[in-house]
Amino acid sequence: MNHNKHRSEESVEDYLETILVLSKRISNVRSIDIANELSYSKPSVSVAMKHLRENQYISISEEGFITLTPEGRDIAEAVYERHSLLTEWLIHIGVEPSVAKTDACKMEHDISPESFDAIKKHILSVLNR
Image (cartoon, rainbow, N blue to C red; front, top):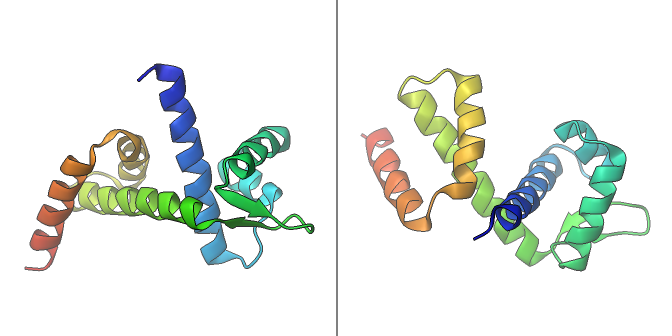
């Protein structure tokens, strides 16, 4: 996989995850909310939202409210699960929380499903003891 495509996929995942997280906090997510959350420019977010809409990951109402489509929600929830679990695991093994969050964000995009499933199974068995 070439680097540009990989970075593009990471960006899609980050935006979808951000929309999911914001939708848990506020009832109506707008582009400005995403820009503020990620500290990105409004024009950058606008271009990204157009791309996500064209790829049918989101829908945007006439009022500008952004919602995830079923496919977008599936991706967002998978990324959010990886991020949350990896963050929790890193903190559990002694990594400082802010570092754990940053590292988990990097790991969530590159980890294979097989490795994530193994880590998830291990973490859940350790935490359930």
